[in-house]
Image (cartoon, rainbow, N blue to C red; front, top):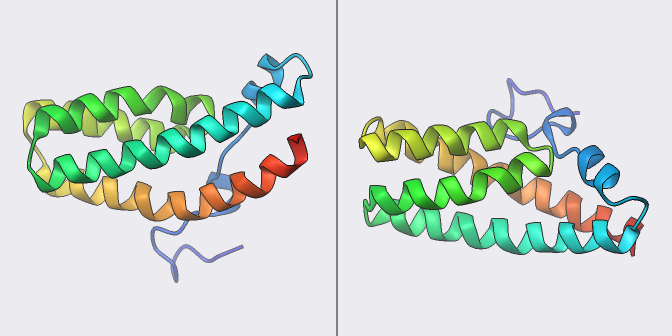
Length: 128
């Protein structure tokens, strides 16, 4: 496990995804779980790209809308910390407040998602 003091902002395994809810919802269907993981990988990557683009353009309404749309899927995949950050981004962007912290939260999510998505891709093989 990585030391958070030495790798600030890098995800640790205990802060990664949790597929418990997804597996329970699947009623034992590995195909369903695999499909949902694939959809999340694709949609979260696209959402983060669009959020970063909207941030660069300082389009706070779009940042808020995109964060609002992405938060439930992060929550569903057990990424509660990131879902909460997306909700915070949504609210602060609407208020056009705390722009620096919005950019920092987006950067933190983006940086950690590299690790999480790689782990999810490996996890996907278990359900295929």
